[in-house]
Amino acid sequence: MWANLVISYIILVFVVNIAYIFQKKILKSRNKLTGCHVLIIGGSEGLGYAFAKKCVRENAIHVSIISRSKLKLEKAMNKLILCKKKYNSCTNISIHSSDATNTVDIQHTINNICKLNGNISVCILNAGFSVARELNSTTLDDIESLFRLNAMSTIIIAQFLLKLMKQEGGTLLFVCSESGIIATYGFSVYAATKFAIRGFVDALNMEYYNSNIHVAITFPPAIDTPGFHKENLGKPALCKKIESTTDLFSADKIADKSLSYALCGEKYITFGKFGLPLLYLLSTTSQPLSILGSIAQIISLPICRFAMICFQFWFSTLVEKEKYKVQ
Figure 1 (spheres, rainbow, N blue to C red):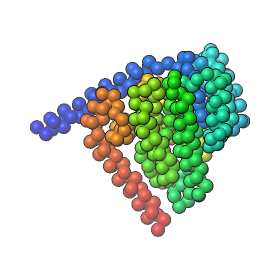
Figure 2 (figure 1 turned 60 degrees about the vertical axis):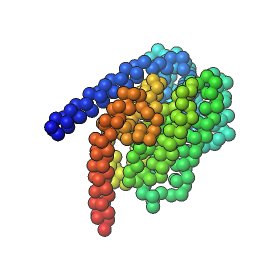
Figure 3 (figure 1 turned 180 degrees about the vertical axis):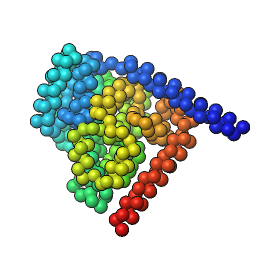
Figure 4 (figure 1 turned 90 degrees about the vertical axis):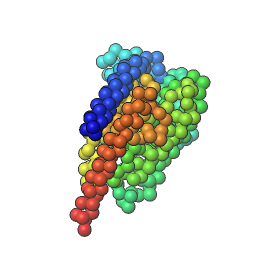
């Protein structure tokens, strides 16, 4: 009897999850960037540049890119012009140098962009960086810089954008990290900034429920970008071991799924073999998924929680082994 119940439960979980994945893929295929003015904050390289490429490829009417480095912006512009020719795109591209942590400067830049290219339809908040260190090895400057860029500036910019978008509506997409769902060794401060953004977005989803503004958040794992390779230079070996449990994704793949899902109404976007379990775990205190997604979450949670306990036990074992080596 028990064996039959277990088998029936496993089949139910499998069927409902396949149906939910299929539903998401159908919705993804319906999104359109044509006619949209997309603003990308932190778009000169890496994931931000991949977002810009997707917008050009799918013929957004305007793509406005903000970044601090003029040199990187010019390089991105040159590559995007080639991308326009390749895809025969009519997208108008503009680049703007501004510091996301300078409130007056960034707000002035955004106002100028709106005057130049019209109201913003989609804004991607991608500015941020990572420091992978044990807390004792993290400098006060690093802590302040991480919170200033990853959390404070993102919240302040979002507040300003929401006022601008209030009348005509639009989509705000926040780029978070898997560290905003599960915090691991060496990412104590970085994870704190990402948990802050996750909490901020959860509250925004409640404040803007059933309005003309859609708020989404994406939780990418490790991405093959210049920022990731720079982060790896001083990353503790234990961080790399734990990180190796997930795949290294291309920026193009993350950008494509993140923006497509955000535009079709998804609020939380995850990736890879652990994507659905992490989505179900983070959604326990967040706004409900779709009806089918909520059913899939409820019946899958016991398995997801068991898997997470196993992973946390393994992570703890790795930490103990590392401490033993040091002794």
